Image 1 (cartoon, rainbow, N blue to C red):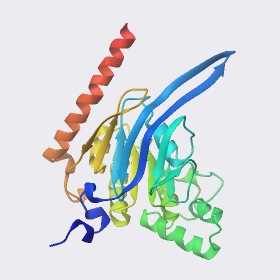
Image 2 (tube, rainbow, N blue to C red):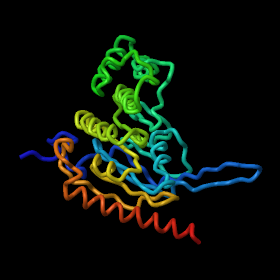
Image 3 (tube, rainbow, N blue to C red):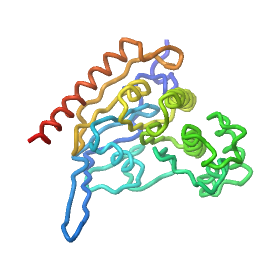
Image 4 (cartoon, rainbow, N blue to C red):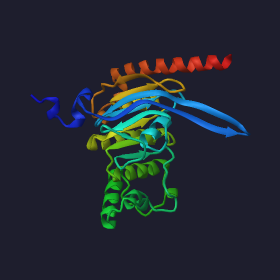
Length: 283
């Protein structure tokens, strides 16, 4: 009989995997000045969470709870006022090659071809040109974009542009993939296809994946675990495991009783925050 240590990382129970990313009591306060008046906003107030190696973790919470800020802090793109971000046991304060980010806004260079967009981070790393070309073409094929190498972003649909962004992030072979509402600006049908594509790619690579979304169904469908943040300033309200069988594209996961149960539990929390916020505005 196999022990957890004998199993591939992605097939082990989450609790048996080593911690890949640790967020410890992270606090972030934004400060700005407008018309001579100084303002500040506490965005995150002591956020702590662990992401296990090979885990798919979704983060959800009310609008303005600091989800994107948290993701950017883990990416090393935003500084913070207190706490610590730990990757593989080492404290980090800036970007690193072990992390790659996929943005909601696609973030593609409009003047570059699809192929050149995917090759760009490899060129930054001084990868041999022929090798970079081969890697980029390989990942474009994996996201279904063979034949579009010489197209430009303006010639692609939103879903196709997001596929380019995903291929670009994966091409660098990061250990940790950070995704900021990546399917938020594409239509519902394309979104479902992209969710399925992401699940397939993740099942092959078993990257550690931190996925921020405002879509409750998406959070539950994709993740091993969903972390719910409180309304701002953001704190971790709870962490809920999702025990839906994988691979989830082989059946109607949304019709599974576990999906409905987890979705209901999270919605009750989000709803209470929304009602509370509405009552505060009424007064």
